[in-house]
Amino acid sequence: MSTDNRQLRVGMVGYAFMGAAHSQAWRTVNRVYDLPARVRMSSICGRDPQKVAEAADRLGWDGWTTDWRKLVTSDEIDVVDICTPGDSHAEIALAALAAGKHVLCEKPLANTVDEARAMAAAAATARGAGVRSMCGFNYRRVPAVTMMRQLVAAGRLGQIRHVRATYLQDWIVDPQFPLVWRLQKDKAGSGALGDIGAHIIDFTQYVTGQRITGVSAITETFVKERPLPGGSSGLAAHVDGHGSADGHGPATGAVTVDDAAVFVARLDGGALATYEATRFATGRKNALRVEINGSLGSVVFDLERLNELEFLDGTQSATEQGFTRILVTEPEHPYLSAWWPPGHIIGYEHSFTHQMRDFVEAVATGADPQPSFEDALQVQLVLDAVARSAEQGSSWTVVDPELAPVAA
Ligand code: SOE
Image (cartoon, rainbow, N blue to C red; front, side):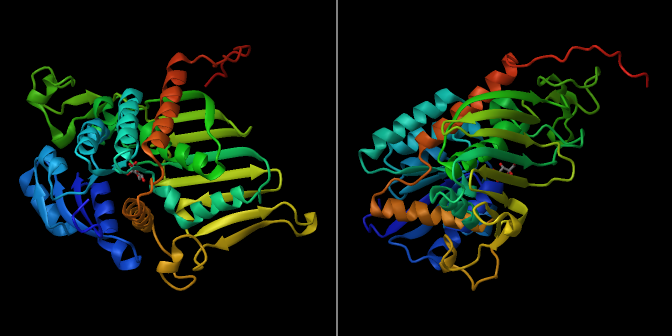
């Protein structure tokens, strides 16, 4: 912590989509919320000096570096924000925690359970020295989602019976979309499962207060070969890709992650749950939807209408029952007192500002921000169980092919 306890000097590693979203949040958090500490956007780190210098200027960072190890051990840094692909989360977080830096790490926490365990253990050790850490499951901080949790916790849904979660995207439906890092297991750990499946796992456990105890899963990789990025050809053909025989022409590489994951689950409070995470839901861009059914009511959240909740109060007379559309923009709603008058809606990026609000307040007051690395390890354990279930196919019962296939 800086000598001035009211200042938090942040160093961020990574400057792509999540780097931009986090930068927006660091820029705004002190301008919107009255917090016990002020954020200083001290330095941003990336491998390409020209690109990271440009990102520092565009995103509002005081300085930049290409050496993350120097950044996380600098005496001029109090917080390390990790916005890189999953294959570097563990190395950076472990070094930062060992250097006594507070850490915010993007989801999923890591690419493997072993890495996540090491990170959670290091976070627990660092906690003893007053060092805080959090994993960036930002959707928890959409006001309507926080309100969903409040409704469940207040008993307004009664005993939770069903959780129904889908997270649908379609950005790689085109087989010519290149083999980017998110489609490579060694970089991303998994595909739709860890990238967006992690969100609905955390989301539903957070809202219900229940944890997934068992799963039965199937996954699929619909497109198994893709062009290498940058229209690579020739040499690239020899990089575990499959280019043309003469070494020229478009080279391709193997997709080594899932395109879609579908699984059923049991939660420890007795609820049955269904989960679908896919990048092949043609027409669905970033469609996260969760419905919770309980003995006294139901609630529905749809990210495409993130300022609203649909709430069914099952205690009302049958003749008057119906899903109510709650506009979650009142100052009494979570996080919203700091923004605009009722009805002036907020957006996706506000969830990151709320995330930074809670992180800064926790660090400045000596509290542990949520979700912790332990919470994120539990999500990692669920991801691992889903992957193992899909691989083993253990619970898969084949339907007897009694009827001959219908002639085309
Ligand atoms: C890509 O699927 C992605 O950027 C995820 O990585 C984010 O976590 C999600 O919020 C939006 O989509």
